[in-house]
Length: 295
Ligand SMILES: Cc1cc2nc3c(=O)[nH]c(=O)nc-3n(C[C@H](O)[C@H](O)[C@H](O)COP(=O)(O)OP(=O)(O)OC[C@H]3O[C@@H](n4cnc5c(N)ncnc54)[C@H](O)[C@@H]3O)c2cc1C
Image (cartoon, rainbow, N blue to C red; front, side, top):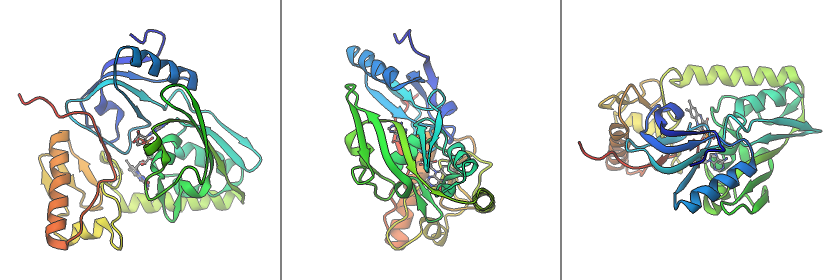
């Protein structure tokens, strides 16, 4: 199957997620174009195979049993970035940090907030990724993609229905292939200085040396997830090798655990925070795949 494409068989998803967790995907494809994505859907469809689309895997918890069917990773082979006036047009697989650096190089401001978010532009608009008072919704002018049946789709900012860590991509179920970002002219030196400042703030506050998927939970209305977790005495709490970071309680980190332990920790934190603080934390991370068969 999938002979014409760059595809791995039984690919351990722990190699393709920043959490470094997850069992094998039956097939993992690295498409080179929108046409290849359509062709992959077609071939999987003929074989009755489910298809899952991911980017860099920086917001994912893949379970230990792995993912059945085909996983399409829009990332390393779809990374071109071009500039047209005050716009940056990036293929969905371009990394946000690289696009932010390209914008700085071009003297365009607006994307500095994204320089430390370790995901793709496609994942960024899908999640409406944001940090330091910025979010993808503020800079996205248009999103181009394709539906699983090969029909093209092109949405403007309003049609993307951006919300807190969500967008139309989830509801409409299409694959993002290209994103047009509308930025403003700025001073390259000031842009770079802001990026350096935000990078330093991240390094100071976040456990960047250990595998994580960033903030595990969404910010609950009127609260901060990390503060609630800390107040409930859960900083440093662990199940197996999954641990609530001592540096930043909003980050649940992996010190060599299984997805099972990690998920148990997510559930435990939710339960304790709900019991003690009366607030239900919702995961920001997306959970994919299936549990491992019991031994
Ligand atoms: C250390 C660290 C720090 C982080 N800091 C932040 C932060 O400050 N702010 C923030 O918002 N997030 C942060 N994150 C989380 C993550 O980087 C973002 O959510 C990022 O936008 C996810 O992009 P990705 O390419 O890794 O997507 P993935 O994790 O691979 O996928 C996330 C979702 O997007 C969908 N998706 C991905 N690509 C496509 C595509 N081409 N077409 C359709 N759907 C697609 C997937 O189906 C999935 O539902 C952080 C993560 C880490 C590890």
